[in-house]
Length: 160
Image (tube, rainbow, N blue to C red; front, side, top):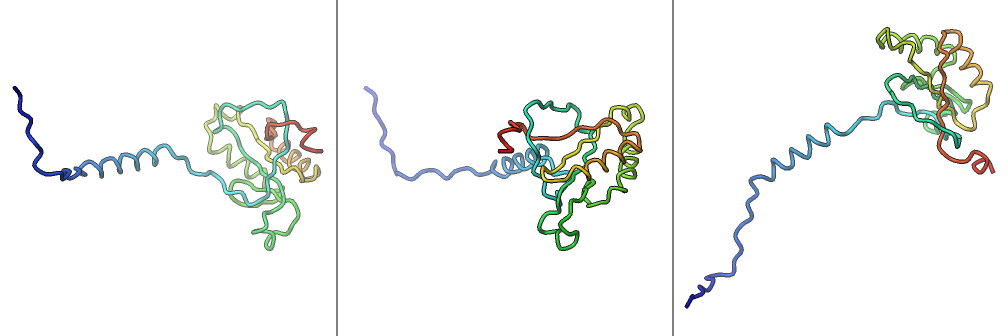
């Protein structure tokens, strides 16, 4: 007949925390590798219009973004309330677009230059005159692949 030994005391053994720093560092490295930093900080209001027939572009590294819209309230004291253009992280004038395009082209390999696309992220309240000026300057520097960035949705319902 088996005998059962009675526990001597009810205390729990101490939890071994020796591997806890390894787990914390492993999580830290994972988030450092998996997280992407924001590429540009918007200085303008950018409420994109909606469209129902949109396509995603495959290679985002071949896209040059031109933002247009009114400066955000933080920058209105400096730049006013008229619609402005943002190229990368700075507010610019329409005449700065050719220099921006040449700088972006200089950073790409020569075989990728025909694939470069200019994406216009234009606020819905921006007037078409500014967009026409942007397109004219893009045409002057032979940047003819233009893409308009929109949100997915029904344009008719969004305007009502």
